[in-house]
View 1 (cartoon, rainbow, N blue to C red):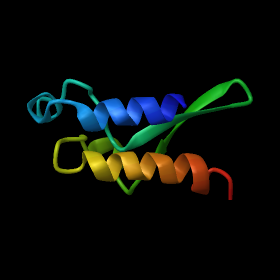
View 2: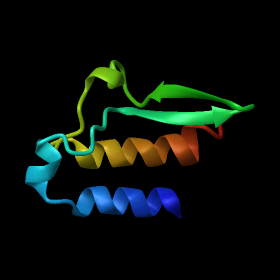
View 3: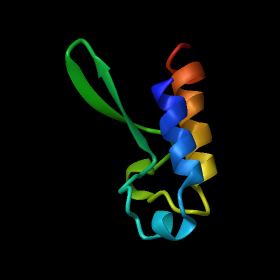
View 4: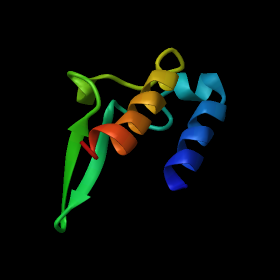
Length: 73
């Protein structure tokens, strides 16, 4: 539920704010396992790609894919 709500807020944000990098998001997600955190790149070089209005839907799609498909396999 938290992921859905967060992604919905991102998609509903003012495009100008997203393009100003207010969120500070890149194409990575943090995963916690066995009391440690690590970053997973959602796409190649994801840590270097800033989420903006042109790619925010793709970012949200990759987050859902990772959470509900990739991390389970």
